[in-house]
Structures are given as structure tokens and as C-alpha cells.
Image (cartoon, rainbow, N blue to C red):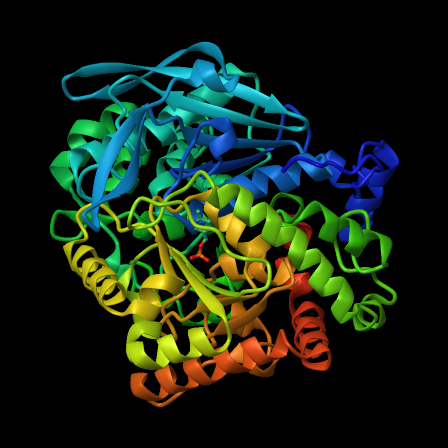
Length: 581
Ligand SMILES: *Cc1c(COP(=O)(O)O)cnc(C)c1O
């Protein structure tokens, strides 16, 4: 975001004293002794969502990785993000109300990456040379592996040879890349099991350099954190033993490490979570609810315990600069972007409806600027008038998130939108190959097309990405988040909405459920029909609140008081550092 305000908006942590103060607020003992530029926090992820650095993700997992790096950079934590640079990425556009997928080629040279050297990973048929590229940003850096045939994110089936090849390249290749730039990991965080081979590479290095196998396992376990985002182990991909023989074992030097890994197969098949929980003593889930309900078992059938560390967002990336400035100058956030220790609740109480409306109008302008170069289902740009109420639903089009829920009774939806001079923006993307959701989206677009009120007031925006995610958080008055309860691990788009003073309408799930259900407009019910009724009722509550100063202040105060701490990426980093050290 461009800051047009000449006065200094941000308070960057550019002095060493500030950083020491942050570290000391975590623990009295200084973390700078545990993490250093040559011994950094190493974060492994198959997906990163950071468009300005040329890497497009698929969803929340990638946004989280990008935000972790941004928070580390802001707080001057020595941090390496190890991730692939995909030479291809997928996009969507609409043709005759049908989603068309297309692909664009990416060159890392165009995004300020430097070539370091190449590293080899082995397959049964020979070696593949991977380019190691890096880009430094403050105390953080991107360290990426790539080659022309690396393909795109999540290409092929989840248990396919190509996915395994990508995962092996990221793990073994990424570990070699780390050595190449002179680092050894202070800590390894595995963002989901696709990164498991990084821990194997470390174990193998220790053992083949002479450490006793069991000592090496203990050492690796102590310094590896596995972060789980998936609820059910059964949903995870499986690989065959022969795939491991071709792609994995050739990259392992130590016979005992090979034997250890072979023992993790049952009936010739393996799920990567099985060895991952053995090699990572530290394990976390991404919200309180998720850490409690994630149903994972180790190889002996014992239930795995996950520490809950709720996702946060990098607030300066996802919040209107004028709102960040407001939080800083009104004693709501401190210079680390944590809620101020003294007075943050009282200071939230002082936010007036005029302030909220003024800031939201600025956000609306920003939204319209971005909408001007995007198109709706008919290929036209969208403009939302300043005096119109705007609801939004922006997320991946997957079934459990229920994008179709508000359209259950299309006449009722039309009535609400018309009565409140409201518009509704739906932004999403159907994953390639998800024929169910592809069909549901088409049905939805035809339903909208056939109802003149919906046709005027509901806008579908394809190719959902960070730009749209941000724009809608800035400019919408109320956002709708209705996953089937129990299926959302955390979700972060609702955090962007609250940070930007929108009214959240949500089911009590994921990170939303970290706080009591009366902190926002809850959608609940014994069955889906009841939930739909509640949803429509809450849409009216939200629309009325934007017409009534007292109610508007009530809901914005309530949300910010409850969630500002949860939302803060600094809080997330503090929680990780506290857990790790
Ligand atoms: C914030 C964001 C997400 C995260 O979405 P959730 O559905 O809340 O997990 C995904 N994709 C994009 C483009 C985002 O900006």
C-alpha cells in the first residue's frame, strides 16, 4: 500500500534497543543468543503467498508463511523462509460465466532474487540440478529452490511422483541450500508435512557426520516444530514404498536413517505425518479449537497432542495505513503491534462512530481503486458507491466454507440487499479439478443472473488473490465467514476484516472460536436451515448497525477488544518463540 500521508505513519523497529526490549518481553534471557544470522529460525513451506516477491500461493497456508517472514523482518528475528519458486502459476478468468484456468510463466530474476549456486537431488534415474536463489529483506530472507520443470504449486495428484519430487527437492535441496549460504538451523519449523524431508536431511547430516543415531534423533526432535493445519489424518496423501525407493532413499546417506524411515511404512504405504510426529517433539495446531480436535495418532495408535498457537497476520500488510496510525497514536497498539499493556481496552472504548466511518470511507476509496482494474462475472469492472453498504465473502471455493449458503433463499437475500442499499461481493477461486465446486459456482452465477436485484447487487470476482483479499477487507462493511463448524483450522481473512473495522458475521469455528461467541455476530443453529435464518438475521443486524452510531461503536469495540491480541502477528511470533525456547 502506498502511504500518501507525509507525516510518519509507522514506528519501525530499527534500533537494537527496541529489538532487545521485544526479546526481553518474551523471556528475560535474550533470544539473540539462541538465534543468530548464521543460526536462524528456518521456516519450511511448500506454499508461500507473496505476490510482490513473485510467489503465488493457494490459500491460508501460504499467507501464513509470508506473514511469518514479514513479522520476523519487522521484529528483526533472524529468519529464513525455505520455499520453492514455482516457474508457473495458475490464474482464472470468466468466460460465459464459466471459470477458465490459464497459466503464466514466472522468472525469479524479475523479482530481485539472486542466483547462489545449484544443488543436486537424486532420483532413481539420475540427479536433478536445482537452482538455489535468495532474496534478503532485513533480518529475513527467502531461500528458494527451483528449476524449469519444477511445475506449479499443487500440480498433479497429491500422492503423485511429481509432488513427491517437489517435496524431496524442498526438503533435501532446501537443506543443502541452507548450508550453501553458510547457515545451520537454530530451529526448523515444518509448515505441514510436505516439508518433512527437511527434518530427514538434518537427521541424516548429523548421523553421517558421526553422531550416534539415537542422539541425532533426540537432537533433531528437540529442534523441530511441526505445525499442523489439517484436521483429519485420513485426508492426507499416501506414498508407496517404491516411490520412496526412487525419490527419497537415494538422497539419504545413512543406512540407519533409511532403516528408521522404512519402518514407518504399513502395508507398503506411508503417510508423512507418521514419521513427522516422531522427528518433531514440538507440535502445534493453528487455533485453540483446532489443536483440541485435530485427530492424529502416532504409529502406536496414541493420540497426538498439539500446542495451540493461533495464526496471526502481519498487521501492517493487511491494515489500512491510516487505521494502523490510529491504533498507534490512540494507545491501542504499541510499537511492536501488540495491544498496549496498559489501557488498550479503555482506548478502544474511545473510538467513535465518526472515526470508524471516516476510516472506512478511506478504505472504500482504496477498494474502488483496485476494483477498477478487476472484472466481475460479466467481464465488467465493479464500483461500490460510497453510501452503499457492502457485504463480502472472499475465500477459496471449497465446499466446507459454504460460499452458496447466503443464496439458499435468493429472494430473501435480494430483499435484504435492496432494503439496505447493499451490495455483495463474492471473491473466490475453484481449485483445479474440483468439479463439484466448479458446478456449484456456475449454478450460483446463473441464479444471480436470473434475479434482477441480485444481478444488480451481487458481484463475483474471479482469480481471488491477496490484492482482492486486502481490498475487500479495507472497503467492505461486513464480511461473511460460514465454514461448517469443526472444519476450519483457523482462517485469517476474518482477522483482516476485524483489523480494518468491519463487522464480522461468522460461525463459531477456527480461530474465531478462540474467543466467546458474543464477540461478533454469530451464526449458529441445529441444522443448516436454522443457520441460514440466523445468517439473514445477522446481515440485517450488521446493516442496521452501520446506520446507528451506538450499535456501530458497540460491535467494533467488542471485536477489537476480543481479537486484537489474536490477530497480531507479533503475538503469534511471541507465542512461537516462547514455545520454542
Ligand atoms: C487471507 C487470505 C487467505 C486466507 O483465507 P482463509 O480462508 O481465511 O484461511 C487466503 N487467500 C488469500 C488470497 C488471502 O488473502
